[in-house]
Image (cartoon, rainbow, N blue to C red; front, side, top):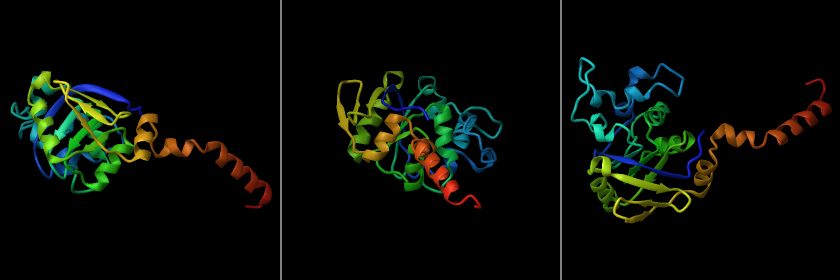
Length: 201
């Protein structure tokens, strides 16, 4: 998993409440177990019409937001089923940060395990960031995980809270497997002692 320290990128506004995981990545794309290739189907039903053509009014289809790395959204983002494909699709598109007033718990935790920083902020702060994001290609935000702050295009700063353990995992690029591998030496020592004590097992 890639480390997350500081990110400066274009922010795309998606001021919708209750964006569920089926909206993020529809069920027909869940057949793969690969974490790559899902970005093209992110928000599929909102991005494309029945013939597969892009809907020009959808935010991520607009030229100024095609390379967005930050998504500013509404309340209860990531609700619905607990599909890990949702953060996979966001990450494959290029989204590394999602800002919203609130998140569904399972989606929120899945983001950290996949290198995405979900930031929950008071509604009034999200409104400010939505206003910044509405500036298109000039909507550049800087997210500093170490300092736990978001810096806007006009120099404004918004502080955010984050669990210290989750923060450290992102800073070091550690998912569940990475955390386990940190104990590889202790695990090997235990297995060697166990094999010596119980050679028949």
